[in-house]
Image (cartoon, rainbow, N blue to C red; front, side):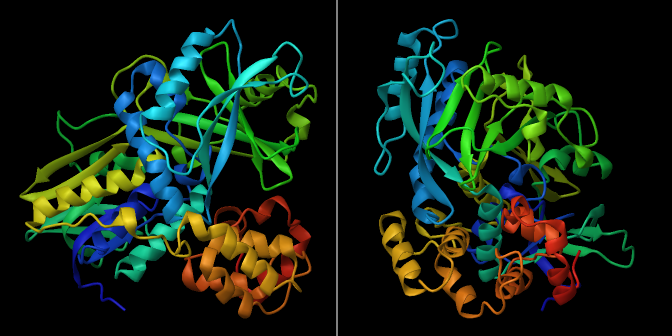
Length: 487
């Protein structure tokens, strides 16, 4: 247990994917690290993504070749590090002649196949869509990217950071930052008695990155601006069979994905619209609902509307403001800003996407090493995230072994736990305790999440650590509330 008077090498503000990834990298380099998150880990943008590890096919149209190549190379690195929460997925792109000519799609997919290299993922190919979707769309293309449980990716990085010595504190809102006696002092939750001290500060606060800078008078005329773009998704009962996804071109130049979700549902998104409100209160609006319903209704016989939505979520992407035009064309690449205040270094992260978080963390670690006069190693590309030991090539074999070993338990629960905890699932299974009346979760899993993954509320458990909120009814939660005194 650390003392508040301890001086850390680095304090990181922000417990999204960038903050957690940076904490893992730096702690693994032997530095003392404190990560402060004002809410729950992955509570904001990092649990509201389209849940893809992908190169970003549409970014080729904006000539973002460097970003796409970097992201494509990361797909299989991450797949091999965390095969329990990341898996390959087929994406079907119907050809809509009025949107983009066929030669452009073929050229884009050729680049997509070859920019980043492939070991596990297949090449794109042309397919016949007759009978699959509405009659006017008879041909299309199929290519592979990866799906990811985004919130769990954050959690696993934080767990590895903790295992390497980092201190992770949730519900710790930074209310004041001062430079004092050649150290940063960070106060949380309006505690004016004393703050946490460090030699270096990393601002990975996502949508709040400029707030951290501006509210503490750390900005100057050269400080980059952030552009907030809202993305919303809806979840409806499955509107098609199969474990493949669709990517639909829209008349405004955007694309909308339809993705199988938790076996029984289809997730549809995203929107890209400018946002200027309170990030803490972000939510989907009627325009977005209509837009997403219309986007897929053009392609499927089974029509959806507001009444069929079982869940929705929205997030705000803190994009680096490159002063481009519309929101959908703003770069998704990241920008790392190093600046000095009273001889103290602050490193701020602007923009980025979940696929390239590990590379971002490596680059931040290099800046940390330069600032603290230390040699930093690049180690994360070959170090599995907790539960992913053995890599992608051995994952399906291991999963079958565990399901066969515990064949007297529900296969649905076993498979879900394996796809969330990987090789740590067996520890939970052995200490599972009673099965709650909802029939979806054991007492031992709740205890594990509270003890090992910073879960403090039912929302933490039901929507970020798992997606059981889609299945468990409110009146089935009383037993869990009573056993663990959480709400």
